[in-house]
Amino acid sequence: MSTAKLIFEGKEYEFPVFEGTEGETAIDISTLRAKTGAITYDHGYGNTGSCKSSITFIDGEKGILRYRGYPIEELATNSKFPEVAYLLIYDHLPTKPELLEWRRQLTNHSFIHEGMMNFFDHYPPTAHPMAILSAMVASLYTFYPDSETNEQVELNIRRLLGQAKTIAAFSYKISRGEPILYPKAELSYAANFLRMMFGSPAEEYVVSDVQERALNQLLILHADHEQNCSTSTVRMVGSSQANLYASISAGISGLWGPLHGGANQAVIEMLEKILADGGDYKKYVELAKKKDSGFRLMGFGHRVYKNFDPRAKIIKKACDEVLNEMGISDPLLDLAKNIEDVALNDDYFIEKKLYPNVDFYSGIIYRAMGFPTNMFTVLFSIGRLPGWIAQWLEMRKDPDNRIHRPRQIYTGENKRTFIPVDKR
Ligand code: COA
Image (tube, rainbow, N blue to C red):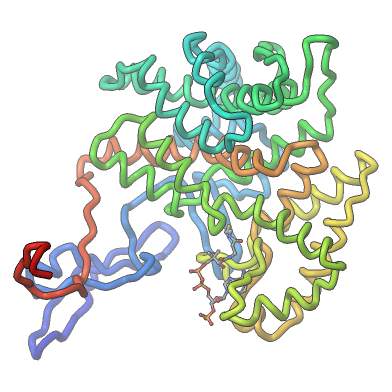
């Protein structure tokens, strides 16, 4: 094992260096403070490895994304979402009997406790479904508080994966004042969700193949992305040994923001705004280059991908297919393509390595399927669930796991003397 040397205040210190299986190098500074009295400063954690993980590999420069070693392109083309969820959680592709059993269990656990139905009734009709999803997932613990043993954890994983889509669809139906539909055993994960969202008890809902395929692919593309904001949140909360439901609920909240999972909603809102303003997209590309304008091209840029986002490539193709097969022509898609063309040839975006990310086109597909804008991030959450679960489980099983507790550099006032209110 090699070492890295640090010279600090005239003294030399050595720190071990280790490599991951794909050759990524890390300097282990866990003894830095004890040895030197100093801490590292890494605003936004851009250079900090918070854990060792064998789940997802990303090479941002080369545009590579692999789950458990399998390229995202192969999984997105050949696999189904429950199969990928199994892979992420259990570290191997399921055999046929394993997959059948896994799917059976997810279906069996997709019915929510009837007691939870009361909760839905008391949200205002305008409630954002992300708020409902996060609250409902945390509330699952009140119905299933046994979460200590491995068997209990396994059961909770199935409940969570099975029920999240039911909760999401119910919150949508109730917000519209429409009757809910319970899951159907014979339908796939994606088809069940579409039926619960858009079906009605009045007539049998026929799930469109195109939509089922596209949703399945979108869920797979979102299934994990190593230590992003929401996943780090799941690990942060879980590091205190908080239960699975509480940890995932926190992750859902982390995902909600427009710089993370909320970007797909923000992209559509941005495109609608540009269209309503006459469609002059070049003006907005220019605006995005001016920092003080406060305007960013939503769906562009990524903390890790600095060449292209492999998920965006797959989604762009799927977007064309879905809209073509459904016979939909969406002015927002044309606008998105124009913005992409202009930005990809603009020095500002080239220099800063800003490319369309996964969220740039996903919203257009969701829109074509009939999902309202505020459900987009919910769809992302359902897709990301297996990744969060796998990461939480990996941390739980890690004998070296410690509660996550970063330090800070304090920049506030030095000690002050308290002055009573009548003397101030
Ligand atoms: N439009 C215009 N400029 C952008 C930009 C965008 N979408 N994204 C980044 N930049 C600029 C920043 O202003 C910054 O400029 P500077 O070097 O002059 O300061 C530079 O590019 C680096 O951006 P920064 O915010 O430091 O990168 P980050 O790694 O912290 O953030 C994102 C990454 C994804 C949060 C950021 O690119 C962004 O806000 N994108 C839009 C939201 C989005 O699509 N999120 C979904 C991610 S999957």
